[in-house]
Length: 373
Image 1 (tube, rainbow, N blue to C red):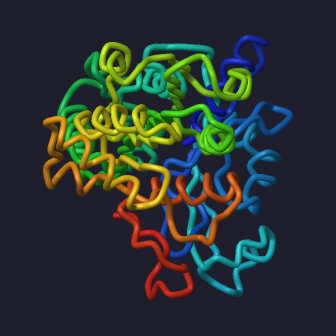
Image 2: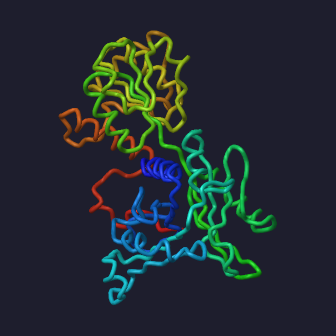
Image 3: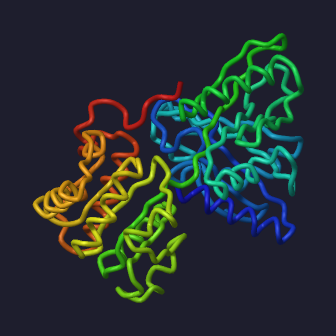
């Protein structure tokens, strides 16, 4: 989640300095690869700026050759390590038994169909969008052309006609499914492929509580790229400056929180004020909000007491609301220290967000990631 924010931040800086910038994007993979389609590397003519397209084995070649490779326009470069005897495999030290295709392009300073400005808009508005990027074209002239879809509509430098209509339909489907895919079309000039990528804003995490144990949770969540909101009932707790990395800081009682906060459906909420009365009110708000994850710090018996008190007050959580409640909060990692507990909480949120079956990867019989379609 954080990588896109770092890339946008780097683009803003390099554009402000008036320096040329290049973008490398993984557009297709096969076999075993470290990164998946949509991974990006932002660089200048001299150095790496942000992001990455591999575990480090491809970046050096891209940094050395991207500028001259793009002298005539966007180009796709393939890195193939499926053959143990492939000279390129030894040159780059891949050893992953996979193939990575990377789109290299020089970035204009601005424009209506600009990949990083589009991503920046999705992040700032906190609304998902879709970017369809042509990376293989039988005619050879459309590589790097794009169609962008967001709440404001469609923008594209793909010429009007059947291809733009088909890309728009694929973008609509991707936005509905929230899934990135590769679209393949047969055209009069030959086959055409496009990466149809869903750009998601960072997932939101709301932390109710400003105790000492909330500090590492907020810091780690920010490091992972969450959009973090910290809520306190009063101005007490640890110094507010310790939460300066949070995107939003609010002071609101449980009775007033609905006036100040409207969590997004895929938000995660963690209740950890260490005060029964405050936790009870915030827990009701969290359950009623419809967010995807509600975690409560403390033993199971304490949470059951909170739920009993809510029922006595006239609020009985539904089965669906209870299904989104995680108490005790966090994965069983043997955590004891606040930093370890923060790791356990965020690991559970990550697993819940992705639907991952939490287990050691060495027990997984198949590949780590589903193969690209």
